[in-house]
Length: 119
Image 1 (cartoon, rainbow, N blue to C red):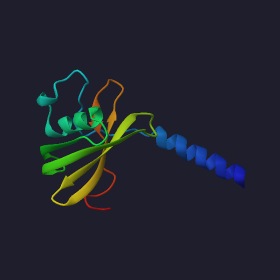
Image 2 (cartoon, rainbow, N blue to C red):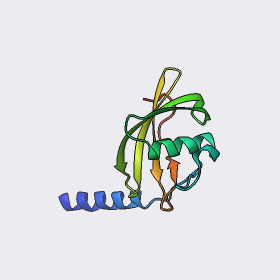
Image 3 (cartoon, one colour):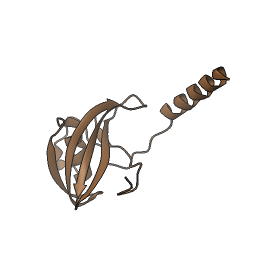
Image 4 (tube, rainbow, N blue to C red):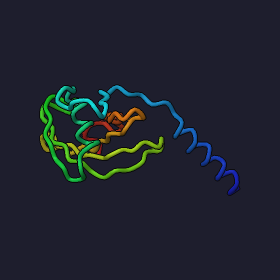
């Protein structure tokens, strides 16, 4: 029984890490000027290059017209990417988000997994 459980868990973890990713957010390369990016691209760059606790405000992002973002801790995703967690504040709502570093050095916002205000 334990053997079956280990095999099942291993298959699930491998399939999850190998799943194709969608990227509908702006990609920002490490040598690109952040001022030339879209609001979401600039936000991804800020999260990726900022230090934990850094805070900045962005206008006209997919999160809202005016959003304050605070950089959180770094982690490695199941896909092996370096990612950074962040928190946005928009009119009293707090939301968790992340930016991950792509192979070519670009920081991109990870797709949302929770609906706005779901937690």
